[in-house]
Amino acid sequence: MRVSFAGLVLVNPIIAASGTFGYGVEFEEIVSLDKLGGFVTKGISLEPMPGHPAPRMVQTAAGMLNAIGLQNVGVQEFIEKKLPPLSRYHNCKVFVNVFGHTTTEYLAVIEQLNDAEGVSAYELNVSCPNVQAGGMAFGADEFALEELVERTKRVAIQPLIVKLSPNVTSIARMARICEGAGADAISVANTFRAMAIDTETRRPRLTNVTGGLSGPAIKPIALRMVYEASRAVEIPVIGMGGIVKPEDAVEFMLAGATAVQVGTASFADPRATERLAHGLEAWCRSHDVASVASLTGAMEKPGPKNKDE
Image 1: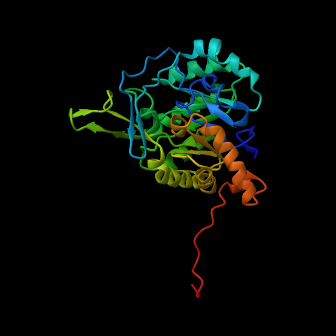
Image 2 (image 1 turned 60 degrees about the vertical axis):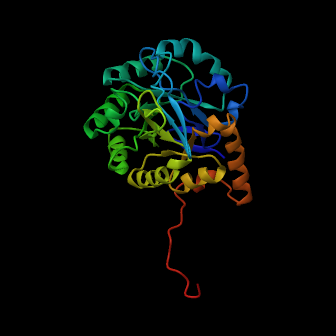
Image 3 (image 1 turned 135 degrees about the horizontal axis):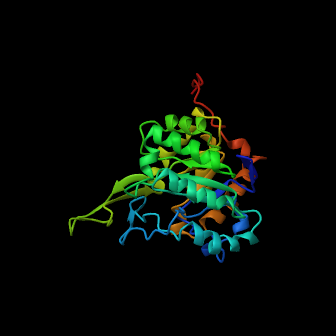
């Protein structure tokens, strides 16, 4: 079940996604963290952020909308209080999602994290659709994205993963820019910008008006983006978007993902990540897959039909 990417070895390819797993410690009583390949923390900024006022989460027909607004305790408190308890886990890799409103803020967060123990990699959040500055502004601008990745890569002492926005014209183009700027891996992709309206009050269901759509509703689009991104670059791709059962994870790996992140499923079932890790192993056994890593990019192309068909 082991997979390798960006110089890291994970016990399995299941990673809990940022914004759905808190700081990790919140889940340790219900999830065996060492049964996961890793988890990504909430977005960590230079200073604490309160996030958006409620309502900031809305259920949809096949998923959910969120506009949390990157609420977090800030990098200093994260290092002092949230990170130390995670040292008891040896198999579960800790990826820190890094956010800034400016390039300088991104750099300052990474520089502080460089001095902290227990961080396996950084996931650069350039794609959050729920904040007014930073976030998606970087992920949708080719030149800003290239500069940000180049500058953060220069100071980062841990592998740098870039979490791409799906709200772009070409995911392959953005993936190539990240690779050229020095990224060690990319995550594809963040939530899709969307909204919902209460027809009785005629008001938006989210205080922020728009938010990020996630869950099974986006899976076919996210799967296509992982396929396109993985064909465009040589660096590893982490896939995500509506993974709720082992077969979903297998699909993303066949499309080109080296590992996958599980997010919205944890809201419906807090043990979803561990369940999927076990389920993926069982799927591999039942399908005589000796190494889960062999699934990456192993999708068979449709060929000409047999004359007898």
